[in-house]
Image (cartoon, rainbow over all chains, first blue to last red; front, side):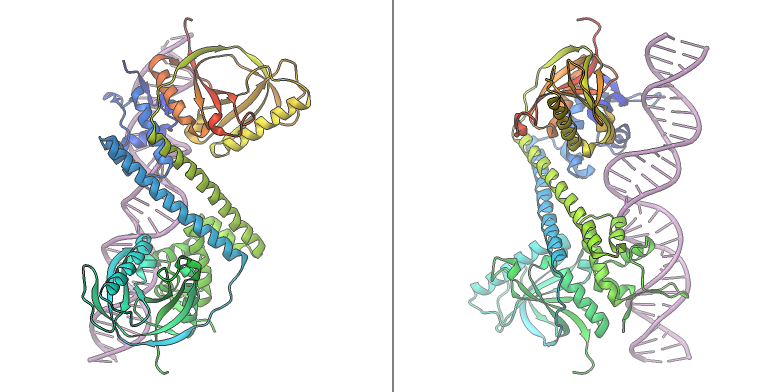
Length: 272
Length: 272
DNA sequence: GTTGACTCTCCGGCAGGGGGAGGGTCGATA
DNA sequence: TATCGACCCTCCCCCTGCCGGAGAGTCAAC
């Protein structure tokens, strides 16, 4: 026989506040086992306690309500667990990222930076193989590694050598709005055969203000900031994606602190 | 000479969206260096880029806007750094908690539990020394350890022995709303002298449904849930704080997995 | 029948912005 | 100098996941 209790009692038993329970009812996350049609009173059954527990646990780990709902709706325990584990994995990844950001910020607080040099460069049009995509910022790093790896693999498989440093182009919307067009490319002298998402591309010419960034690109915003300040102060900024050239990257060394990246900001140059 | 740019250019240079910049202006976090009184256009100066960078960094680490504001308002770099480091420390603590919760949940997914026995117990009124307080849930663990340590120290200093297991009483509001009354106590035969926040207390008698919880109390909600289900199904719940008795706790062993805690739910018993 | 403790719905608000409507402006070109 | 497209402005509503309170209806014990 199932016991039936009021919302207040269920609140005390489940450790969810009355407000929260009503909210969960409203959004369909946890429906009372019975609602009196006369007065609207909600009544909960004792076997809803474990459900409430699960909800509390998952919400405590920031799982969005909609996702909790789909977990509960999944009939198969296997599916359920996979959804939960997926969320836990995302959490772990988040933790790692935050931890890294914290460490970097601590580092930056310890030792302030010296100003860096800015170079002007005229980049000619360049034939290359490339991968393009509309990318969410959070996926950028994974996409970037995958795409660069693929390009190198294609090149290697055809016995070709890069004709210049690997590079990338990034629409500023990626950084402002978290999503935008991105391109990575490797210059090639001779036409490579293209496979899958790899395509041939003539990287357009550009006038760039260039600053060298050392270390992981997770810290790239600092260099971007410095470069942006320089450009605002001394140059005329023009339309066009930001450009990066990976002089030393993850293909050359495992230690991100050793990476060297040129960051290029499109500018207008009237004279030399 | 400072350059002056429109909000769009500043957005591209700072990687903050136009919407966000307007929002930061509105809340006073980042004021444009100049606002045209005629048309309301915002203009930013190049030396605001580093400020924008700092804001972006700190916001990226979930520092509330108000706190970022006070960081920027702090004139002394020392003070600034202390504020930031404090936030980073909080973040680290958060990370540790989340990590632990993730690990526990993974564990729970691996091996499901067997149902546990529930015992009925009549607890008589008991003289004790106690510490009470209105506690936020997040501070509960620290408060609990501190208070228990203090009680034991007082007892030890007076050469007295506990006359029963250490216990605690917790208003259910703590769990429902994150804040409420809490009490920890140690029964004593002979009157102890009381010092500071320690007081003498007669722990009121109670009828309890009791379940044994093994392991860290971070997982206590599971046992609470099971016990709550039992109470809803088989007992008549009455008013009164939840009660815990720490049979094996942090004073006895360093390994939280070894802890044993009795969890008591106040019930009504008409007969034996 | 009267309390007092519950319960209901509805409204408003929090952070930290995003989306979009509707309308004014800027500047480079023709 | 007119025009056009790219900017910019304000205002309002929306999002998530609840919390707080007002005003009114209900339940159960005495």
